[in-house]
Image (cartoon, rainbow, N blue to C red; front, side, top):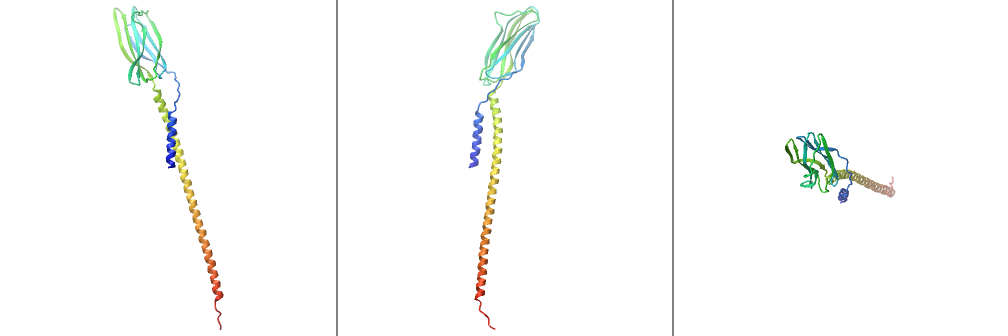
Length: 238
């Protein structure tokens, strides 16, 4: 019964420690080029951090580079999506790098780049997703990028990572507690065995002492009886 109580207390302690929240800090992530398109005098690039955490802001850089003369861009949009609970695709924000109706006419070998801050919602994880839409005119022809999709920044599942780390730590603590309990239990049984051995030895000594007393009393009684009979022996006459 005592052993069961100890095990229950250990499990309850681990459960309480497991539920204690752990704070965390976001580390600086490397910047990667997630999208690159090179066609008809125009290069479009999209860069963003390799990973982030829910509730953080990420810097998404969009650039277009013109390496041809007499090129004009009608629009360039980048729509960022996330996946709510890792499943449902939801648009976060649409970056209007070049707006419709305004357009942009770059010079030869000119780059137009800008960085945008995008807020990542709290309840998302897994990859984010981007789509590029663009239209430009070059050499009397119109070119399009129609909702060209690509995966981008990975949103870490912080809650799950924390739970896994806490589980690993608590499992280690449980194993340590269990080892200590096993050692204590072994020590208890060794002491218990020693106690019973001592008690058995004490009982054996008491029995020996009692037998010795009986022996001494019997011997004394026998000697006394012998002396008495010798004293009462009739005398012989010759």
